[in-house]
Image (cartoon, helix red, strand yellow):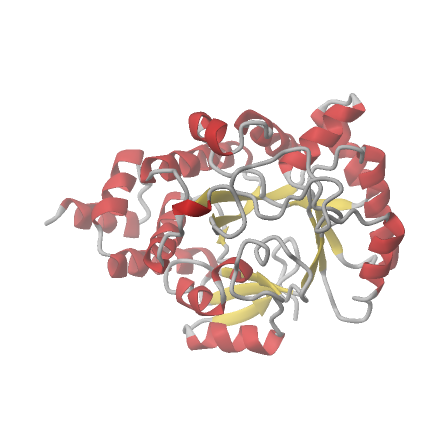
Length: 358
């Protein structure tokens, strides 16, 4: 029996992967077999269900104090392509979603040099006043760390103020790749790995559920991906606070790393499967359809993913500006059900906290 076969047999029975075994699987195991076992482990977590929600994004600004090499979204102040919405403009955007059944407002943007914690708390209060039944999942750990430090508060104090304003969950962005040496090459001035973990650890201690991400397909190696996933698994062992993990594919349009190109779909599927196998303590693996496109997302359901995100309603520009195929991303509930059913699963609407919605 090949080494990879022996490892997968143990994983299929629920045994935890080591870093060494994960590397063997990533390099040697056939993709079809990884998918088979990843789906087996997915079914152990969520049965035949694949989750989606009715959501939209609010992206207050693409002006950012950081200038990450992989980013196609950021624009400098004064650029014709920069935007910086007022609170009143954001309110108008949210009102356009009244009556559409949205259960989640996803708020992320650039780290604006002038906006402080008071601004972001007021933003949450205003959008909640318009859609009081929709959960606010807001601000990456990098945004949070910057605004809280600027306020002179501790991480816990700042998060408590945001919770009081109405924040219910935190998205997973800003993680990029945790290896500090790589981070110094692709986002040298950005918040550190330690800051990202500090925000999420503190959020978990305060009862906030969060997501986690990994940016892959740039200059990292498989070993860096495994290290990233293992660090997440270690924190999850302690706090249990991660709801979902979202692998994010590097898209190469319109940024200073464009010469690198993009990894093929088989790499996407292998990364999804290995994420499900390594993160045995994280409930959900999300194939973010806006990033992958609809066809690859459907394939992802055969490689361990059990969440495809939401309807989006043409409300995000982060991946469209990076060259994603769907330049005006939106997907209807009927489309989601059809996609999931073609893959052999059952589509289930959820809220931000993975409560099922009938």
